[in-house]
Image (cartoon, rainbow over the protein chains, first blue to last red):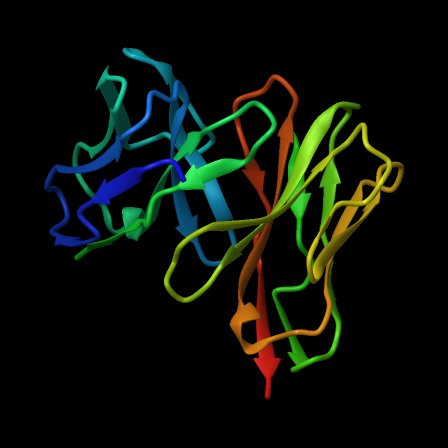
Length: 112
Length: 114
């Protein structure tokens, strides 16, 4: 199984503070993704990356930025957290063309 | 934009019985992949089964099978001999061949009654 880890697993933060979530993979997969999971919406794509310094927006990208300076790391930043960004965040990697994705364990973020 | 719809927010089934979860999708493409993911209370996303649109034969993985109806844009998941460990959220997902994005449905919460 592809090694993918997310940190932190849980975080509580205050409105208006910046937050960075980290995704790390142990294999050199090109594609990495950030999703958020909310009840009634399933998983929605925030941003994704197709290589170092190559990123693109998903359907719910407002209020989020990403960076990928190394193949193995994909960071998601909330510049100024809002309560609407309270969610569970998943990182994923695409291992083969025909496969789905392999997901990290998720980060539960609460903005108070 | 492609959309995936799971019309059953919740389902329940007796242990050892069979249950079918529904999924429909909207696309104008002819070549794509469809997936079912399981998310138990641990929150981990687990790939259950995968179907390539160009294959007419329905995919099967042990007790899990799909009914893929391409013309109807329907992709249902059948779980046979339901077990307590099958209790989870189930997500249907779609990806175009050559596209980078996996599109998910809203999810169906499956409860197994002992």
